Image (cartoon, rainbow, N blue to C red; front, top):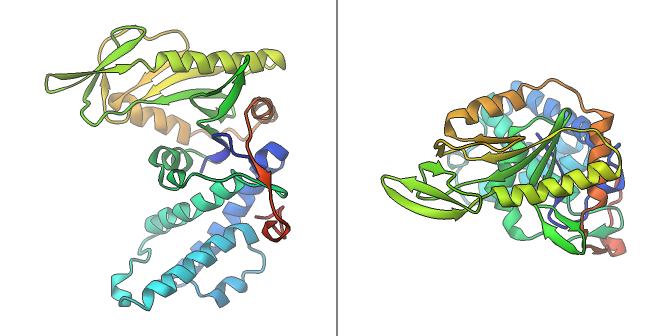
Length: 305
């Protein structure tokens, strides 16, 4: 599961210590997954009770609280409908998806709070399909900056998604269209989306990608960091027609999407110091909007959850 280190202009725990939180997240996630999987293999067919959860003394408070809350919601639901109507994980694959879905709120918490400050999360991000896609389809070693707002000269600009892996940065623009089947990159300014002979004109994503590239290059140069990057136009459901692909750019359409994703998921390289350094420097040049948290709202165990 990729790690959400920056969301829009919200404050992030990763901003406070990029060298601590990535490894901590992986440990918390793995520990809790192993306990949940163990319960499942021992015959657990429904949500654990609060008493079951309390017995997990070694499980992190942060992740545990989200599943504890979920257990309460399921129990409330059980009081209203018969057990047969409630869908509990019936296979290990279902359990994995159930677990990953439960981690999304935990990721959003880390991406919007620190010990003393918090940002107000737009509710739309809780159901954002693109955000969920990135978080659930890439390994823990990938760090995600989703729609970050950055400082460029005298302006603050929202740029494309940045996926920072152990061996490089992917600057990603997702291209989708409700009536699209084929993409025709006809010019620098606009592209054509076509389906069954019906064409629609859209703004070329290359302009935004180049603007994001300018930001990334300026940060790398400022801190004298040697770290590769590529620009990516990603479309899971449409094919690219012929066209000259620009330098350091990939157009990943329906025909090549599975291979592209497989290569990322199959990566076995561990997280690297240079990768974390790059992430730290990029975060320094992002805008952050937050307010002080009242004392009653502060985490008792900030290091865990």
